[in-house]
Length: 512
Image (cartoon, rainbow, N blue to C red; front, top):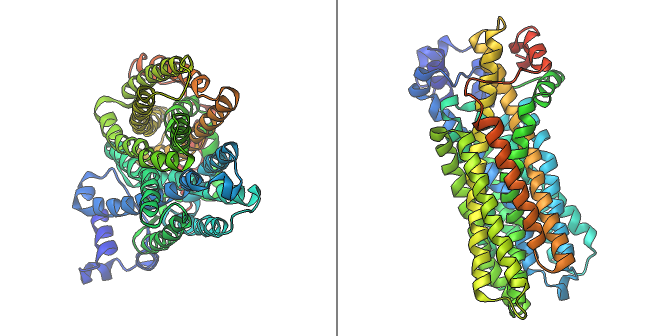
């Protein structure tokens, strides 16, 4: 029982006789550096014997890194609510630009972060990625204590907070590697959902600090998170593992990336995730400012509008994060494609309701009415919940589709079952990073659409038209490609995939 021996050596080394028998080089390296030389998540007996404990521990600390990463990534949507133009000199357009820059950098870092996990190891990269977030956190603290500076240093710090967005792809790729296929939907849903809770958490922290210390000390949010990041880095160092079997030499990444990029499903899944996660992160960045703008339009002062927006803005991301956990589990039961289709149909309908509410309000002269405010709020909350469900369902589709591709490949080659699973895990891990990266650009699009709509018309109705058309198109795509076709049907594999496994076995890719 190789996996049981792994567990004994990894967790306690309590059986001294067996420990002595297995005290080879790899065992010594594993005990000293938290490295695991072999991992087979599909071995049910070993999983039940104790490997699930190792997987859960790594999942827990992966969730911590995602949670802190999301909090730092969405730091600026909280801070801009309490940066009055009279003190800092920034207009609403400037604040939207801070949000957009953070979203853009977060999207751009996701793919390299997921690849870095494969090259350097999940634990090693997690240590670096959490520690790196101290730079923008402390830098933002310094900026907030020195108002009157130009916009560019704020943009630099906002860009660096975007590194927190990359943590998501790295941690999700790591979680994907530790869990068996039958549990990937739940594991990825938990990692993504609880990690996404970093968005409402930092909003609640900001609200708590305002309630205790007033709205003049937003920099205390940065101070608190600097401490949490140090604690997270220590925990990751002590309790996470690298799996040598899952690491890939940098020189071997090209055929893997080529196989992922040349697969049609990669781009279709990215488009679907653009709609689900792009909506989640885009609305998370913009929701507070949209509420604040509407409260001001209803006749409130800027200070009152900021406080009231902060009191409500956290609810959307909170419910979306919780819905993502449930979405992953529901996708395990019902199928990711069916749930994704239902989500996009519902999102298109809700966007239509927002268009109707906005059109009615545009015909009404005077301050925004309470009924319209309530309608906006309820519809936005519905979009958040639906996007959370969709995030979980789309992420379930990724390993499922590439697992099916690997089985088709297995039938037409001399690939062993173990090598087939390695191929599926490697490809789906990189695909998760690419899909996560491209999906996050949806948040950039939402912020830009809302900004231009407000600049041009003073309302968000034009942006909602764009959202509705996109959601309807995504629903049609899901139905045509993933729901309507027979379950057993798969498109032909790209040449890059065949070339990948035709090389001296997939094991050469992991660089043992």
